[in-house]
Image 1: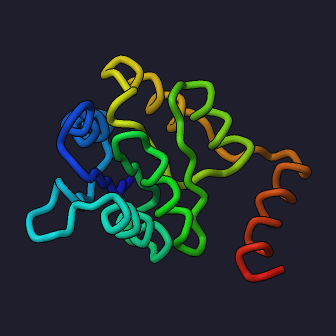
Image 2: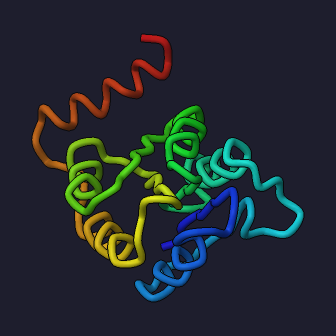
Length: 148
């Protein structure tokens, strides 16, 4: 799968993210500090990665900044995006299952290489819930986005 990847600086686990994705057989599409000529700031980089998902150029995205908060906020401003800030494998699995999250946000400060591997394993192993209540909630997010 093509995975858009954005970081505002190449610190912490930023260097490991594209490598971990490639190791799992994915094709990273790089933005921000990873890409020459792109603005690296978290709001611009995360929005670019999220637009790749929303416009079908990538199946999912991973966005990173110092805390992960700004990256998740920026990504969530793009229509159709459900970004989740995940600091552990259980949160990543739940975000995919119950929220059908399509963008993973990570903290460059708090995520260790071992946690990164666990988070990505859980993220990619999980899929959207088949439970009606979960599907109804995810559908309602689209209604909220459209002003409903």
